[in-house]
Length: 243
Image 1 (cartoon, one colour):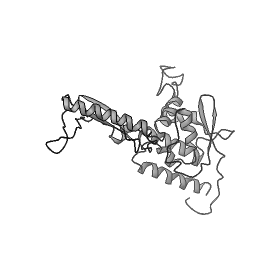
Image 2: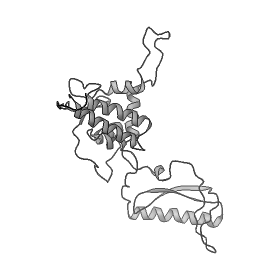
Image 3: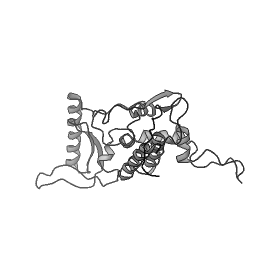
């Protein structure tokens, strides 16, 4: 049957997305729409070989306005600018290090971390001051706090100064990425490094390097947004199969 291989590949890709606990919400919706275009050509690529990102954005988030025959024409429907929202999804999914991820992104009570002298453990009173310190060995950052006790304040001041001197003497390495790259896992045909650089000019490749093989898709940067381009896949006719 025509395009049977493409359909099977698409089904496997969709199943992998649904099984990925990080591929949820808008990431899942955007990923499914892009996968449908890549695998099945729906929506079809433009005549110049670019993926129709505007059409995909409107499929996911709705068109700009209601059709004119409706009772309330020209009223916003869905997001005011679907393409910009799509770029925000790409920006949030860029591969990077985020110190909040290590702490679960949830608020937690920060306590004083000064080690006790006369007993084991830490002071553990509610912290009245807090700072994020950088590990000179890994570059990772974490919150450290101290309470209002004089001894704890002196310990905290000394800790901050030691950390400052260590970082000045030995600049920390770039920490390993700990978030993002979900769509990259499932759509490796896209050159996501170019996309992330486009949506975030300050983005730098993580030290882990590229986790996948060289993509077959390229990104043509033009205007205010990236366009994803790839030659249309060649479809084959398979005798037999499902009818």
